[in-house]
Length: 150
Image 1: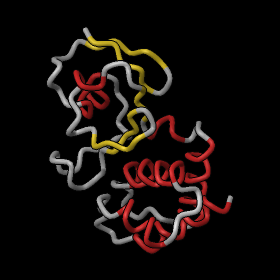
Image 2: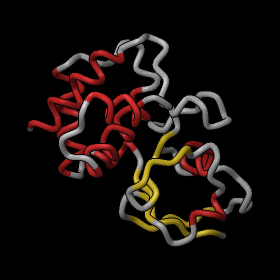
Image 3: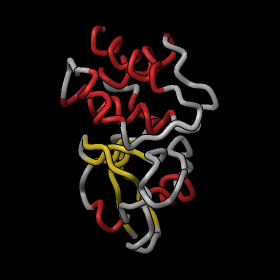
Image 4: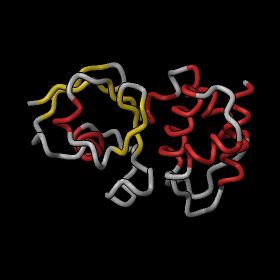
């Protein structure tokens, strides 16, 4: 049994320590907002925060999480920056298919927490590893800038 701090609450799961955090979130806890994309950490769809830092949950084993706090898309709107990002996302109509949006929002929130007034280069660097098949990158940048101004 492993106890994790997820979205501010303790969750005890019966999982092998080598199980990816992604599967614990989705399959054992029903937190399906975090998406499976590629399974090798290249697309960013499974991004969550681990003590405030964006990580690919498909690459992090549940045993490696320890006592660190996990925040998923289900709770990012409870944070001031996350709420601003989610609002800006809707206003800029970023989502098309929506599949990558949880990872995009988690990555953008981490960027704004670290760099409250990012340049285009900052945005491009932070978001470059989070892929969008629909190509909404211009709207992603617009939403991040708008969230930074809010």
